[in-house]
Amino acid sequence: MIEPVLNTPAQLISLVASLGIALSACEELVMRRMYSDGGLLSWRVLRVARPRSALPWLQARLDELFRPRAYVALVVLKLATALTLLTLSLVDPHARLAIGLLAAAMLTHLLLMKRRSVYGLDGADQMFAVVFLGLAVYELMPVGSVGSTAGLVYVGAQAVLSYLIAGGAKLRGPSWRDGSAMAGILSTKIYGNTRAAAMLKDRVAIGRIFCWSVITFELTFVVVLFVDRPVMWVMLGLGMLFHAGIAALMGLNSFFFAFVATYPAVAYLNALLHLFQQ
Amino acid sequence: MLDTAVAALLAILLTSTVLYETGPRWRVVRALFRLGLVPQWSFFAPAPGTQNLYLLFRDIQANGEVTVWRVVQPMDEDRPAWSFAWNPRRRLRKALLDLILALELGREEMRPDLLKLSTPYLLILNHLSCLARPPGARATEFLVMVGNPNQLPRVAFQSERHRL
Image 1 (cartoon, rainbow over the protein chains, first blue to last red):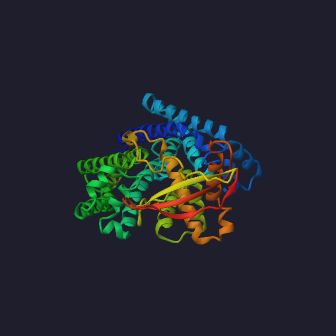
Image 2: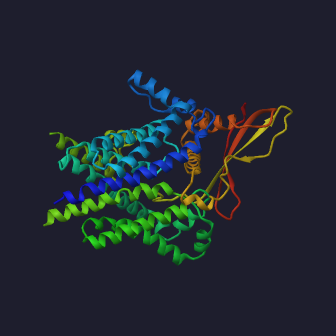
Image 3: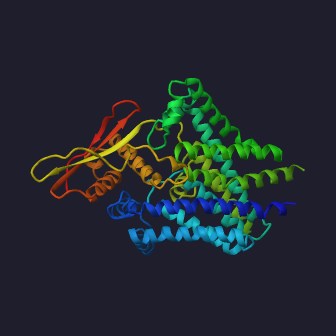
């Protein structure tokens, strides 16, 4: 009974996440000077501070890999991996071994990125790591096995957990509760939006509505696992609008792909829970 | 057997995610976080950054003259309208923000002579030292300014002068 909903979620996850990684890799390539010896994230400096591996030969390989030209080549490889995964997911979604290995390779790319520098990373990078770990497990384990199912369940559970934890943290924040947080964030140059900030300026009630809407949405997102399918689609639609709004107002474009990529897994988890209830 | 092992591993990662945010940060949880397998989901909370941070630098010329302060990268500019779809500066600006915040934190926790050896300080200094500049500059120094919107920024940190 699970079979009809098995292939589609993994295929959709792979498509959306690969698209997001491809975009992110293109953006990194445009800004590749950041990784040069004189760049802000120079390995010449970082190598002194980053944790060293206990295995000298591994550390030597990593040092080679994190140098400017090799690291840019690694980003190109990440782009190529994303495009291959995208194509394969469209053309031959049943090529489980190939998709699984590519997803594992993508996870390795993401973990290497964190190994090189913790500066400049964001929540989208973390969610992409979750997505590709789950996808690799799902595709590499035998079809219909507990291990394979666990891969998708993991992605769906992390998605729900991410909203719950983010909502809980906001609830603890005084500026979120009094409604000033969003006006403050939107007033900054890095994540702000002049028009939106002007709209919220001196309008405490609107700010409070926005802040509490975000908190409520994030805290109640977990309900998506237990509601009927039509309500679930509405909730996932709201989630997409939420992330589209974040991209539009805050410029966090990769968050849209990283989080929306988890939605097929959330839908899968919903179906699984309903199956157990029957 | 493999099924159970995989499911258990993923369950450990999920539990570690919860523990990292709410419970005791055991060594294994911290190790998984450092590895990148345990995420941190508390975005912009509980206290979101609502101040603008600026990194500026100036050079000291061979004749002793001092150049005007210049903002590093366009940290004082708004994002372009299309940044919702294409935002290549996102990672660079986030890296700058992370470095400045780490420097601020280090200032509270470290002695000044140790702060000069911290990773954020060295990354910023290395970057500034490698920027293209007119000939004749002998030394450089940098400044972190913090500002609330519609208010004049204030100096949060000023580095020593460093020979180029």
